[in-house]
Image (tube, rainbow over the protein chains, first blue to last red):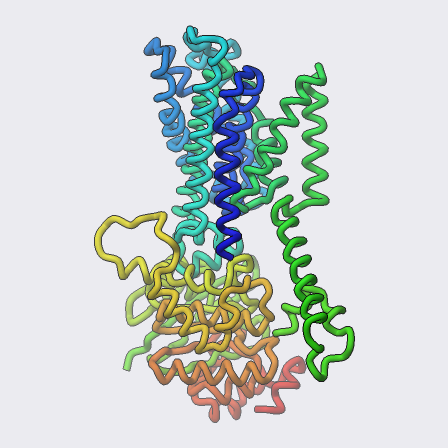
Length: 352
Length: 261
């Protein structure tokens, strides 16, 4: 057990080192794609902290993202800010997104399952429509950031490290929440919310807190995106594909697990970036995205990591059984071949 | 002697169906009280009204002479009423130990001093885990502590549900069909555990169709019929009461059980 933890820590350290060194390769395009990949890692992890832990599937994460985009955009425009100070604004985007999460959550978290999904989509479209119709958001023209007079060769590096930092903070936060009293309450809500309430869990408060944490991280990423993309436009800040993509990433890697959303984002975002470059018609990439969603839900409903973990456990169990058969005589009274016939699923049942 | 738990004229209708009408029951401290009645007589509805899983149309619920009508389930639990469900409800993807820790939260919270609580504190302190282990040993499922609850058998889930209700030290526990669908050996274990807890001071109110179980265990039985408490008394009196025979034991679906009565 200890060696396994050691291997894991070592693997994580190597992965982090490689990721941290990417911008030093000097490949501008690679770094630019890397920013997006890391942003999606952070967003998928943030989505998972609420939706994965509680089982409430939200398709309204783009609300937080867009609020982050517009918060930072409006502040920079009104204060005429530029230079390195912009990076200090990202948490402000997160803060406003977390504030938006309060009324959003108080409305949406009253209902469950399908109804909840529909309510989040409705709130999402309200925000998108507001962004494209209010005068102070710039309407369909949007808001353009001040020009950053940075060296073209390294212009993406600060964005890359900012996205990496947010992704790491999100992942550490998710890990800390998972094993905490708070995380246990979230997972209890996922399994049986009414029962959790009956055992003294203040469900609304707990759900809302997770919703706000998730919103904060996503809003911070929105702030980053404003400068990265160099505009705040309603259709990109409040993008329905953002919601679908991060949900798919979490489902692909392993819904409700710690590493699942990270794996999903690392696999999916590079593909999406590549597909958009290969095919001039961006709709092709989106159609493939939708098809992939269906394939994952039907054939891999629990995601890559849980499924792989199960296969591994089964493999190990059967190997141990075979080793035991070779090493010792079968216990008396046990019919020949009985142990080989028992699948790993049935052995646990026999205890009852 | 005033009752520990009391309902006064509780009524509840679901659409056109009057599930409870003017239902008054009393459970005295230290008792193992039984609640019987034919299917649809309102037993589970009464449990739901007491534990905050629904709103009463009229009437009141009292615990220790304090009105608790309309309190939310978490508040009712914090006041000292624990409850199990007819179809067991455990957190299937949490381990047995994690199930216990969820139920212990409110107690840990009330034990803490100071205003600040670290939200990221690891779940379940050493004391909580030790207490949880003791209770799991008490109910006989300690060796399953690390298993996911979904791998437990139905009877084991019933024991888990009882265990995690116990960890909050409730004054009174409401059991909804603790013996339903459980094998005879386990029924014996469950009733023995209930007796043991009762000796230590826990009051019980039990809904059960298994007449042998109820008559053997309870020292007072209340009969519900059409949402109304028709009669209440010691098992010996109840089993010979004509109204009970009419309302309950005479129905054909209870033929299996009536042989015991």
